Image (tube, rainbow, N blue to C red; front, top):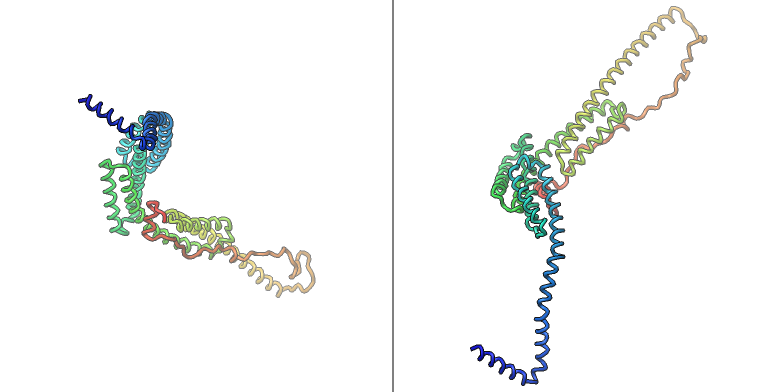
Length: 351
């Protein structure tokens, strides 16, 4: 059968060669095909060489860059409390990292595994921050401010714990952690903002007390420093950091109160001395009047006694106490702090 096939093939070749009109048109195509067939092995070999040299080098560099990124994310997770809140999951993730590092050293493309691992560490970081935030909320009683919102946040935290325990992929863990954190952050922000508002009002009242005793004159530098603390609180407030604002307002309130007390006491003591001096002067004047009636001196000049219009001291030039008062706005506003904006800030979304 093979012989028949061979003969048939030879016959067809002869018929093909006899067709001169088509031979000249088709022969170049055949030649091209032959050249192509001959060069294909060379291209394959070249690709293999590239994979063995350039591509492998590229994998090594990519792995190295991603490993650095993963290490940074791991450190951030530990700093956020992952060793406390998710010690077991952190240990498992660290074991995965060790295994991937061995593969990466063998010049294997590990970009997919490393990217997934990076998300796992980021998820542990955000999950730890969520747990810490939840504790702050409960410690301050903020969970009672909006029970519905708090219950919703608790549901999201349960979902987060579920995907972590089921060892879902890194991106899924991270998305769940972000959603849970954002829910708690919104509660924390709104509640702390109310505290900051109240503390600022109290600080302003204490400032008014300090101004009433001219503290800006008596303790100029100290008064200016407290005003800077209050302004720092305002800066935190408008940049959506109510916790920082609260701390600064509280500090300003306490310092204004202490300053008022100090200056008021000194002024009271000074006033007491003035009153006592006035009383002595009055007694002397009464005595002088009585003596003048008994033995009048007259208009002659007496050694040791100056003329009544003589200038004994240089004229004092007192500053206007009103000019020492540092004006602070009664109210302060935070821009774009709606619930939606606060939620977007928590998960890092930009418009």
